Length: 388
Image 1 (spheres, rainbow, N blue to C red):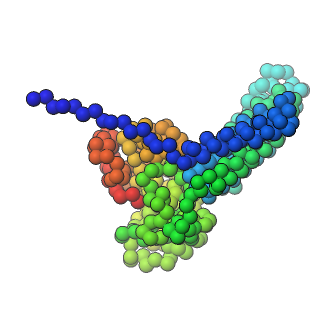
Image 2: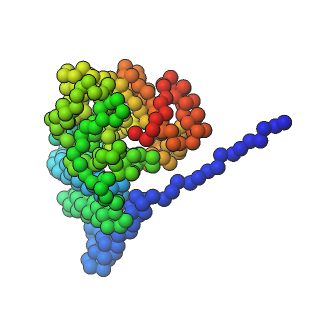
Image 3: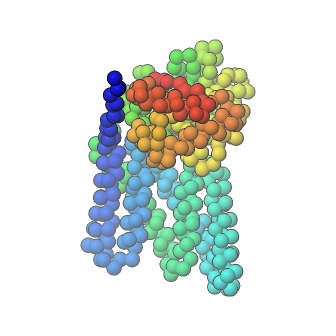
């Protein structure tokens, strides 16, 4: 007798509040900047209307996050990144304009390319120096866009519109997130200063609440974990994390794990410094639980920096293909994040880290079976875990 084949039913993802709020913020931006200010007050011929509207919409979409606090952080990063790119861009643009005015066009074009390259290096390096590497990619994009205004008659005005649009868009995103169905604040998710906490036989470090994903199964969606809040008032310094570790008896836990209500690779400097302190002073095994997007987040290969600070890495696979991954992970990088996760895990293994992948037990059994197949092809162990 032939077995009856069962087609997997498709369940479209729910339209979450973040999507609704983002769309609403775009509408509010259009109404305020383009319609009210650009058309009714200043008139249709207002030169800055299009520029400031576009920049405001981009800022609104990128800034909107799953919580008000994360939206404020994203707004701060967006504004600072734009300012850095604009300031350096204008300085290099002045040099480019001078070259086009005083040298043959072919020479000027080659010099312009050189200025773009040097400026890009400077922007990325500056972001690293001020410990703001997370916005380096944004800074470079802004820098290059300012530089390509070399033929504009009003480059300074264009730059001002970009900055103003970014600020306005960020403010609109914050207001919409705070006013329209704001995230519930109750006794369980009040902000705290919990930088270290015990779970089962390990000590966990909670060094950031920032995350590039908004996973549907994540424990932070519920507000608290194990009866304690892991929402941070402020991100801790290296010294504060070390002091938090010292409050626990080293004999009371097996290993130390970087894992909290955020993606620890957002805090590379802090994590590396703390990890090396642990190795030097406690001799404990250090594990990083990560979503595998650290290279995208930081705009570079972070694995060499983790040497000597981390022993093992657990990468969250979440699902077995890109579309399934996006359904549950809701990454800011979209479906492309899935391939990055696989690539990071392979590079981690090749770099000598004790690497495994993990999934949560709440996904369908048939999906778990497919995840095992993915990991087998990678030669990687897979751990089915709880939501932590």
